[in-house]
Image 1 (cartoon, rainbow, N blue to C red):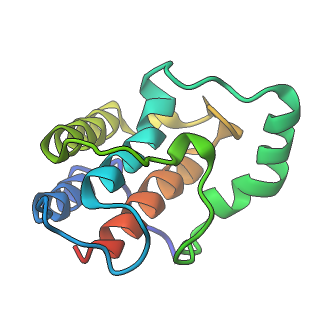
Image 2: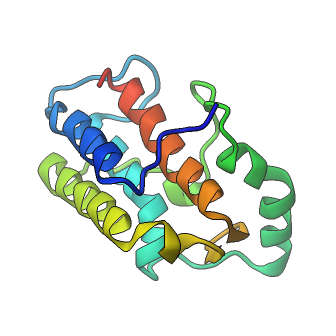
Length: 152
């Protein structure tokens, strides 16, 4: 089953519409993060692409990630609830809901505007070169997982 194409305006607008339904009071149906933390957590995927604030993994860790984690991240199978989270994605401090929401929406718009061609065969932070299909799955699957977690 192919995941929706996050590089299309229609899918991006749909995801943004779901994000717009969140409020600071929205609670998860599973997990420990509050809604502001979840939005910040979802931004990390895009920080890896657009910012240089996260240290790249060393050669050994990249080997592990590429060979043992990548497939679970870029395939079409949904993530199980309460899956383990990589350290960079652990958000435990309080976050400003509105700021994180605006940041995530901006990342989504930037990704869609750059388009699939920009990402095809682009080197990822952790997994090496990815196809446009793998980028799409990684972006869409993670965000959909957490929006579902918060009931939107």
